[in-house]
Amino acid sequence: MLRRLTKILIVLALAAWPHADAAQSPAGSSDPLVAEQSSTSEPLVIVVNRSNPVDDLSLVELRRVFLGNRSHWANGRRITLVMRDPGEPERKTILRDVCGMNEDQLKTHFLHGLFTGEILVSPKILSTPTGVRKFIFNVPGAIGYLRVSDLDDSVKVVRIDELLPDDKGYKLHVQNQAGN
Image 1 (cartoon, rainbow, N blue to C red):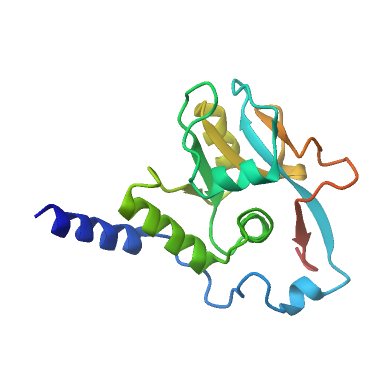
Image 2 (cartoon, rainbow, N blue to C red; image 1 turned 60 degrees about the vertical axis):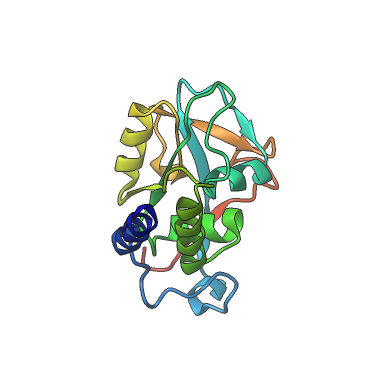
């Protein structure tokens, strides 16, 4: 009975998971828009609730958080992961540069982790930068990402490998495609 209920829950979770844009190419493939030299980039910042004591995360720690392998902050508060909709350039950047996965791999990772109990909750998916900011402002354990241009003082920027977005060597940049 419990096994059947678990299978039903997995199927429901799979059905509810946001579907990636069919035209989205997997990470590491040759996408002409990504390869286009005329596109510019903008730093993508990791943000948390202002009350969160974390100021700096290594890229390895950030990966553990975004893959659901770390469920609590050092102060004991549960981590609530916030991500943008599949297909958004910001999400593609996180998948590529932090998770090292494409959309399908991330989906499989979370479904497997939820099924085995290794991951406690799936990410909260929000469609706008304003939604991300408001959610993180209201949820003390939340973590997410925004373009620098979408920042305001309602959230706190976290250093990655001791670097801020303006520092040389900062690794997270989202591509601004021509026409955006």
